[in-house]
Length: 167
Image 1 (cartoon, rainbow, N blue to C red):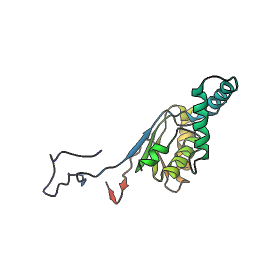
Image 2: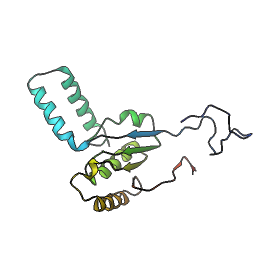
Image 3: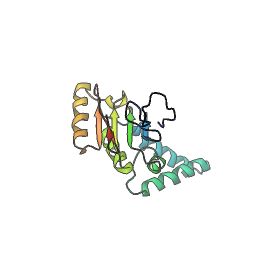
C-alpha cells in the first residue's frame, strides 16, 4: 500500500510504523488455486483441442506451453509472469493451493520463481485425505526444508522484514 496522506506523521514524514510516503510493499496474494485438479483440466482441454473445438482452447494450450518453457516457472498453477514483472516482495498463499505437503512444494517453487518469500495458510483442500493434526506437522516440516523460502502459518504470526525494514 502506498501512503499518500500526511495525517499521523511526524516532522520527517514517517508514520508511527516507520513507513515514509512513497514506500511500497508489494504483496502477491493468491488463494483457491486447486492445483490438484490441474492435470485433469489440461487433459480435458487437450481432448477438446483434438476434436478441433474452439480457438480459446488453442490459446490456453499455447499459454500453457509458454509457461512450461519459462525458466523457473512452477510447472503447475497459474501464470506468475505478471507477478514476477511487478517484483513482489512477498507472496501470500491463502489456502486451497494443493493437497497436503504439495502445497508447500508449490509455495517454494513460486517463491523461487518470484525471488521472494512465500507464506502459506492451509485451506480445507490441503487437508483432504489427511489427518489434520498430522498434516499440520507435515506442513511445518516441509516448510522448514525450504531454507526460509516458504513458511507455513497455522495459529502463528510472523514479523516480516522487507528491504531492511521490519516489524
